[in-house]
Length: 290
Image 1 (cartoon, rainbow, N blue to C red):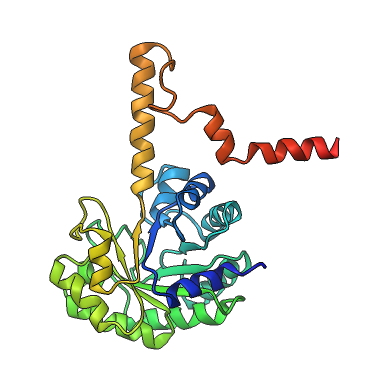
Image 2: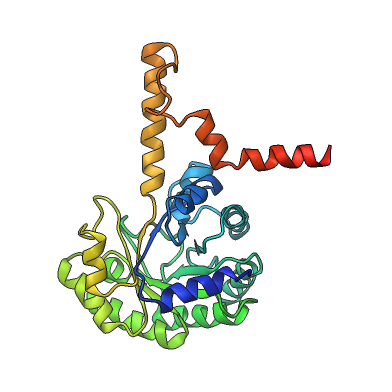
C-alpha cells in the first residue's frame, strides 16, 4: 500500500531508529543512497548548487531552480527526501509559497535557516542571522503554506557562528519549536560539550550536521545517537567523493592514454550502471509496446 513520504519520515521520527541521511546532489546520487540502505536522503542546497551549477553556497540558486532539482531527486527514489530550502527565498510570504510548492511535489521534509541573505554554508565564515521574531514568522508561514500537513518542517539556526553565543542558538531553537518546527538543527557546534547540550535542551528531535574538517568535531554515528540526536546528515560527502573520483579518472586517462583497466577500480562497470538505472525494466517496456 502506498504511503506518503512525509508519513514515512514521520514514522521514522517517532520510531527508535537513529537516522543517518547522506547528501544527494542529483537523482542518481539519491538512488545510490537508497540502494545503500539509508532510510532518508538529504537534498543539500550547497550540493545542488555545486553539482548542477558549479556555484558556491551563497544562495545563488532560485527557488524554482532548486524545486525542479528536488523533484528529480524525489521522483527517482521511494525513500523520503529532505530538501534544503536555504532561507525560504525571501520574506514570510515567499516562504509561504516555497512550502506550498515543495509540498505539492511530495517532498517529505524541508529545512529552513535563519541566516540573512546572502546565506552561506554553515561552516563558512561571516554569517549574520535575522531576528528570532522574523524567523518565527517564516516558520509560521511555512506551516500555513504546506499543502501536505504531514510535511516535516526543520528549522536551522546559525546563531553560534553569527553571534558567537551558544546560548543564543539554544534560545532560538526553543523559540522555533514553539513556532511550529518539527525538528531543530543547530548548525556548527564547536565542542563535544556543546554537542551534548543541544538534545538535552531542545524539546523536539535534533539534527547534527557533520562536515569533514569543519567546525563540528567528528565522532562516530553511535556516539551521536548516544548524545540524543535523532538524525545526522553528511550533506556533501558524496559530492566530494565524486569530485575526487572524476579527477582520478581523468588523470588516469591522461597518463595512460586509455581508460582500459578502470572498470571496478576507478569506475563502475557498464553492467552495474545499467542495473542502477533499471535498464532492464525499460527494455521490457519497449518490447511490451512494440
